[in-house]
Length: 293
Image 1 (cartoon, helix red, strand yellow):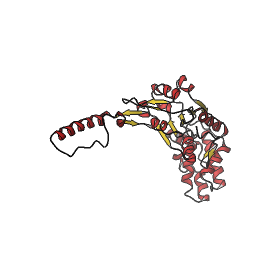
Image 2 (cartoon, helix red, strand yellow):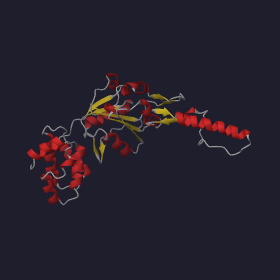
Image 3 (cartoon, helix red, strand yellow):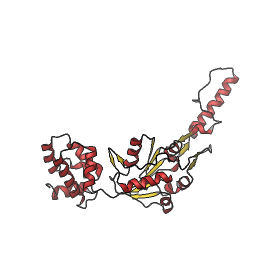
Image 4 (cartoon, one colour):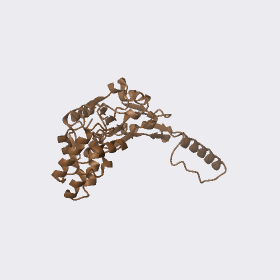
């Protein structure tokens, strides 16, 4: 790849050295980086912030329970092809009748099947050297989805449907591919074998302070310390869904609308708890045991 320099983060993203080394290795080797870890640890933000910081083209595929490789790579528009075929027949008939005005196919020709191939994020990224491709939450996909990617990951190429056109890219020009997983299901061993693997542990309080300061550089120090203290106490309660970094940032964003003294009172009173706690049972537990910290 052209962008093989070590990347250690940006103004909005802290990338610890272990993650930076894994990301660097994946780019040097032209292999995807598979990142696992609990929600809110910055898995998705890594490729987003990297692309923004480096000024690179970004392609994103959010995986769902019905995701298919066809959606991810490319699909053939049979409806448009059929419609254009009918238009070409009509135009031939109009020409026989001496009519000059023709119906338009938008510049497409049924003789060129590539005109009807709708490229997905993967095909677009492989057509754009040194871009960034995010496959987000692959653990939500059907079991066959990661298995169907094995050939492409090994050979660095995709074959377009119907037209047979091959989109291929060299190891040096490979996009930086980041695949995230919350481990809702175990990924196939063969698939993981094609990736560089990294597990992001939840950040300790000192790292969390740095993260918060990147987003709120002028935050009052007392507000910062109090909010982080409460945040980690909440995480130690064994809740059904412990609050994540994203939720802490959302809570603090809400708190920035108030003056520091007022903010302290709101934080201590757990005002806006719905930004942190996301189940009724957890809210009930917190309100009954930790009304004041």
